[in-house]
Image (cartoon, rainbow, N blue to C red):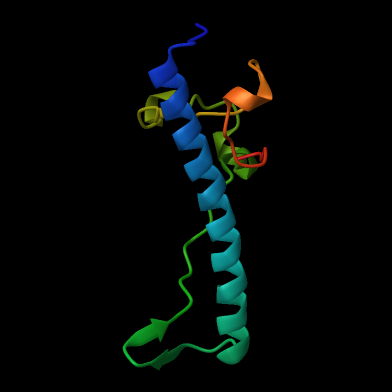
Amino acid sequence: MINRDKQWVEKAKEVYNIQVKIKALKKQESEHIAELKRLSEEKPSQGHGFVFNIVVRPGTVDYKKIPQLHGVDLEPYRKDAVSYWKLSYEGLIESPDSLSLQEKSNV
């Protein structure tokens, strides 16, 4: 369904611009965490109420590598599917002057 309703397009532009900002902030966060690691000499650290620790989460299980499970139907054990809505920007359909988007980015 192609939606050209002005309110829909404006909301889509807002969401897209927020996604671009989040991506930039995540990159900035990653850079700052790397600097904190360096300043902490990659050791747990704290100061002025801040605590900087490493969190380790167990890796996922690669069920295909378990020989006893070859040929076993695992579908009955699968949890419910997770769904979400995703907005992507595939380029200009209208004239460039009609849109006020941040620089195109794969968000």
